[in-house]
Amino acid sequence: MSENTVDTVPRTSETPLAPEELARVVARDIPAGSYVNLGIGQPTLVSNYLSAEDDVTLHTENGMLGMGPEAHGDEVDPDLINAGKIPVLETPGCSYFHHADSFAMMRGGHLDCCVLGAFQVDRKGNLANWHTGKPDAIPAVGGAMDLATGAKMTFVMMSLQTKKGQSKLVEQCTMPLTGVGCVSRIYTDQAVFLIEEDGVSVRETFGTSFEELQQIVDVPLRPAR
Amino acid sequence: MLNIADSCAQAVAPIHDGATVMIGGFGVAGQPVELIDALIDHGATDLTVVNNNAGNGDVGLARLIQLGRVRRIICSFPRQSDSWHFDEKYRAGQIELEVVPQGNLAERIRAAGAGIGAFFTPTGYGTPLAEGKEAREIDGRHYILEHPIKADFSLTKAHVADRAGNLVYRKTARNFGPVMAAAATTSIVQVAEVVERGGLDPEAVVTPGIYVDTVVRIADPAQTDPREEL
Image (cartoon, rainbow over all chains, first blue to last red; front, side):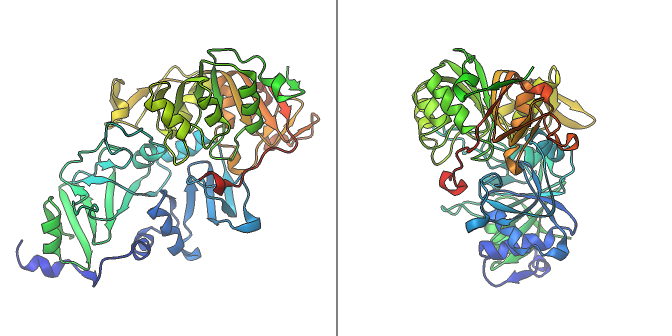
């Protein structure tokens, strides 16, 4: 890497980001007025950082737009749950629909954005997040393929490395794919990556430098323009 | 004509060995608990079951699987923390599994009720779930061919029915109910309340009565706290 690249990628945090901090970064990037689906697990945290002014409408694939926060105590209604099967609340202006409609609005390109977790993403934006590929694993896909393929923008939120230190941003996914060329951005604890037609750019780093990042990730990186 | 059954046992009585049975519900919401229990008691076996999951804990669909009544299951998400009966049967080679992405599952069921012969969907293209399926590029986008899923029977849950068989649902308990009722030769629906004709606002009807064959009233259905099922 040439020396000047080091300066062109802003290091916006001196330490890697905790999931909550990363959720705040993702939330900031969701355009106001969007219809958004947040995947189960880490992506759900993003909802904590969306404000009323953002006017973001949350979709849950089991048949609701305008999903509110988690329900507690007497507010719990067994007939009102999210895709993670957690009881939730309504928001004013919410609506219900059946499963085929719910996925039609996704597949039909009406959903602006979804945020998903991942096992691997590769330089072409291919996503692997449903199956480790281990022969004894029982396959279970849920709505992951529909979301990845259907939303206008698919963001991934994940740790950059596995517990063993391997990069999850890879040259080519080795695990079974969820969707082809669907991911446009990857939010990790160490950096935000943009998947572009001709390569992978780094928009900002957290607690690391562009050069250190390139040591970890086996995909040619460049500073975001 | 709508059949209003006196009991769940009577409602599920026609289900025969070897039948394909769709079961509604996503998590606890919309799960026709009493109808599934009646199917367990009924004893029909060699069933093909269509559901989003493959049973949780030791009750309902999980119990049906444990008893060896299910030969084959078509679902989107079988593996869960408490799907042990399915896991055991699957690893023992005692149950066939077809995993379908959730949106394709819903659309295949919808297609069956809507008389569609097959359809091209982008979901699953380029993944292991597309293996052996016809692929086609249409206007620059890649699709795979998926076929409808029909059933002999559907067991679903709605909130209120009128005597014309029209249904309204509650909140996210609607989920697979409408498409499953339409995709089954005989649809069996449990409801909390049955009202006279004219008792439902026609503008609010979600499932028109033409799709509904049998209704059974369960005034006080089992309601599990959703969190107990996680």
